[in-house]
Image 1 (cartoon, rainbow, N blue to C red):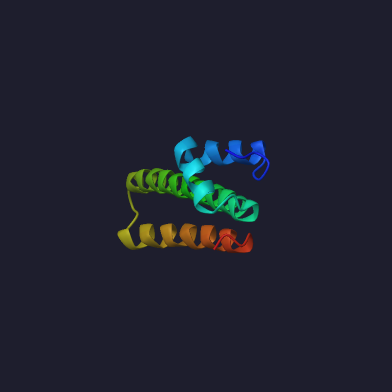
Image 2 (image 1 turned 90 degrees about the vertical axis):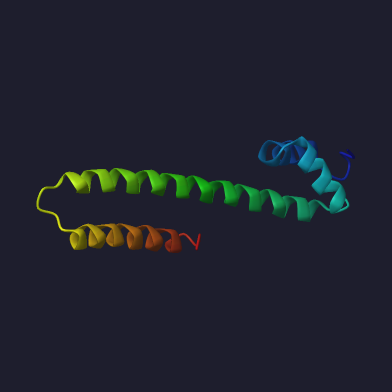
Length: 100
């Protein structure tokens, strides 16, 4: 690796996101272009953040489904309505922060 073209902290961050082999392969593929590597780091960070949000939402919906199934007088329509309100709230929140 040529650390004159790509700074060591940038290289280390890319390695922590995608692994050493893939990072070195990617850096060589883009011919040590620093702005391209920096954009790739931002992309991989955003991808990681979105996967964390998806995992959290999946967990939240599992909890909501479990709790709604315990309600004795809840109809399926009401359960669907509650889940839709939560989904639209999350989508609105994400769009407010320009993630969507």
